Image (tube, rainbow, N blue to C red):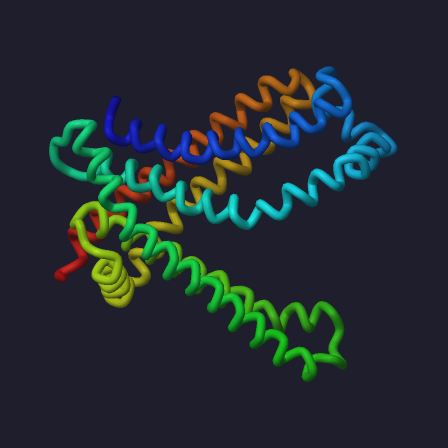
Length: 269
């Protein structure tokens, strides 16, 4: 198996396995309520009575599980660093044994967690600033129609999207610096910021190409899965969705490989 294939498989499993665990909880609850036959198809029957009845009966359980959601999301974010670290270790140049690759990935986790914490905090601050700016404009737009207000707010939405994109690219460049160079979190952040400062368009453009391809694969898998679900059954639709997820993981692995080229060719640090 090539390094790219191993990285793709690692990223796929890093998404598919947690999603499977999360999906099993409501599946078991619904199955225990309605029995093993029919799956969740009955929830979407005409009239919506089974769906409403399921929500009513499982409301206490859902509220109890809901209290654990923030902690589960935090655990998912932290554990999600391991597939990224393993993928970068697989893609890193040089010959390494599987044990050396695993050691490299595990050694990088503390710095990757620091990078994740900083970039998540930066995302929250960026979104809050954009929301506050939009709210500050609201009193002056009171006499305008809804389409005009939406048009005025459009630049703020685009600004928020641009800031989130830059932070996404920064996080990936920084993570590559952590694994490829062994830099600590702070030094790796400075490396990523320096590259973005010197080459913002080429770095973001490289990310955008692979991100758009991944988005196209996701849309195609959803469209094909919906068509096959109506005709050939749930099994084939699920298979198409998983193939699409593998394709998205491949685009992610290709982008991570590209960050290594960007780091080596454009950083003079």
